[in-house]
Image (cartoon, rainbow, N blue to C red; front, side, top):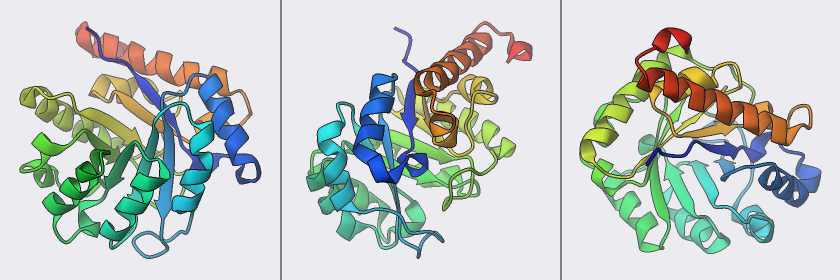
Length: 234
């Protein structure tokens, strides 16, 4: 069975004055996940939202809430976000003193666990934890701000992680976040991603269904071109 191509709109680009309505609107428009960016002005140079906001949007979210913790230290916030309604919690290895322990902490709360790799984070951090992960999130920008340009050199990294996941035989999602838009979604899909985070590419312009469909269709076309052995058309 062909794996789905999931689109996860990032609330970082939503209208925070009407956040619940924005969550409902992008879900109605076809979103598969809600991506919830948490920044602490310490691990990254920005400050966003916490567990109370996650709890507040939970009644509006009929799809999983995908919490991306850009905070250091990370462990203390995990139980709070699990209680607030997170379905997936991902963290950066640089923010944990003991990566395995943090993964197990997430899973102990009945939440799916993800590890986030920045553009310069080596894939070797996956060597001893991939068998415990539900998701690998590759950053295609340096974390901290929305609206950044996609870093092209991340594409071979996506391909490398896709090979690792396929070799493992496990159903691990491969998510890409940062500068993803309809113009590069085909290349991201061809590289092996199955979950695309998009902020401004979804929320700018107000045509949520059209934007989500374009992202999904282009990513699926890229995957199909690679599968058929015709990457020149990606």
